[in-house]
Amino acid sequence: MAEQTVTVFGPALELMKSVKSPEGEMLTKPFLDVCRNVLPVIDKFGSSMALVKSDVGGNISRLDAKYDSDPSANSLLYDIVRAEVAAKTAKGSSSCSNGMLWLTRAMDFLVELFRNLNDHSDWTMSQCATAAYTSTLKKYHGWIASTAFTVAMKLVPERSKFYETLALGNSTADMERFVTEFSPILAENHEFLVNIIGFSRFIFFYFVG
Image 1 (cartoon, rainbow, N blue to C red):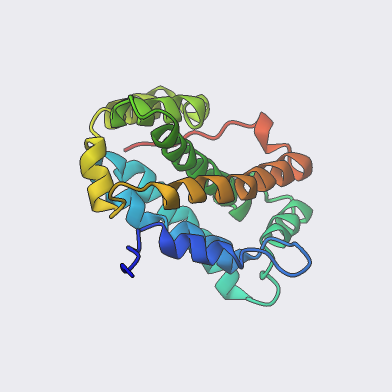
Image 2: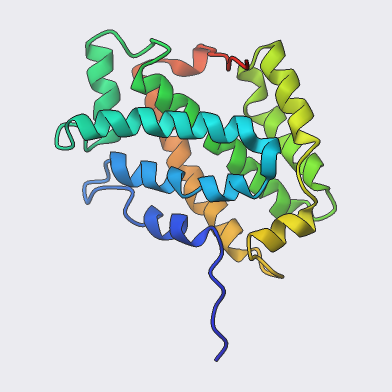
């Protein structure tokens, strides 16, 4: 029997199984671990995704620091946001709530990119990336950030080279699973943030220096 190839999506898919508590609450560390394990996927895009990687890494670090300050009190991701709402600090640019919002938005972009790759075999990688950016992050960006991202989306590697570096070979099953299983988790984050803060009505811009 041939040995099954482990793709770069494998660790994230495994971690996703424990992202919620038995009661169905989103757990801070497992969620962050899933996002952290997406970073190697971002690396495969090369320098074109440097902005995304920096943003994702920074927001993971912000939430990590909060979790590490009191793992017991901060074990549930949404409790961190609830505490900031009670303290009236949730809408601050350096808040964990804002970090969770932008981390979720960045993951939305990546999930949409992978979905485009799955659904549009005739599209180039650049077309997949540009369409994903347009439907997710672009509406939250100012002109400078939008211009930088639009240019970056044209610099992504060719689809065949990307698949090769991900060890996908002729099968995109793990990428498809990642899209299917992570999308509802991200949607749940958005629903929570809208209900408790109304974040969908607020626009926070990336600052590209």
